[in-house]
Length: 88
Length: 280
Image (cartoon, rainbow over all chains, first blue to last red; front, top):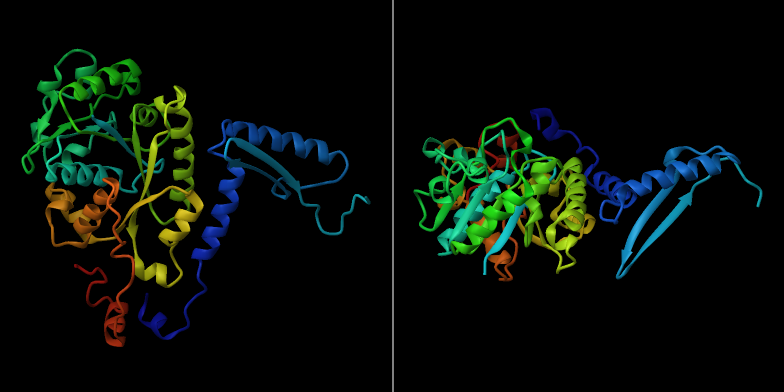
């Protein structure tokens, strides 16, 4: 903190941003699932399959593995870019 | 019954060796028989932090390769009774640690009657780090309130849950504990730093303690004397509390809230007059 900073307004808090980014990436990496590499492979396959019909970016695909007691739940969600519709 | 504890983190520089030194010294101060093993082959440093660097004759790799006995390699700590250090080798051969060799050393240490065998893991997720966690009963995951450290902790927890002997043999899982280090209550309050609650929510591992950022840590490594020996300091007390929680005592967290400072103290600190670290 510099002398001037003391009198000026506080900058926006970044800790919340760190928390949100971590929650997303940790859910997506699935480090605690039985096969973390599998998630990357599924992501590539989904990107390729969906890409045949509508253009999506890698960051629009969220693959998460959640442990619920004895079972692992794999969820895949694809956000379509603004202005695109696959017309269902 | 001995417990094997791995102190790990994934990321480097977060405080694994500092924690290993303080945990082992703290347990020994409670009368437990403790040995701490440096698994960082090629980058030995626990000996310096514990102040026994000039007494190293034989090391972990010498024992594994049958060039020395455990009794020859173990260094007795000068400050606490019942604390022994097994230094890492300075060899550049990263494959010097074999799983069978490590297993034999740990079994022999158990037979020698050690209550706690503390394994100070190297950074990363290479063989040395995996070797350090393979035989663990308990894992202390050291994490800084910082994005890369939190993510790497998640990664290493995943590795503990898949690569440890307990996981592979389908026994009870390794018991994990989170230790947040280099914590600055002031920066958390200002919204600049992840809070221990945030980290807990993300990693979902029980909290063993929060160690405040402190100049004492550097000073104690300068001297080769773990901070737990300076009983009046906040770092020593925070480590002692963490050890108490590990041993099953439920204690409230200390040193996680900022004391309210007056206008002038903040003004002085903003121009670098007066330290921002507080000693308890």
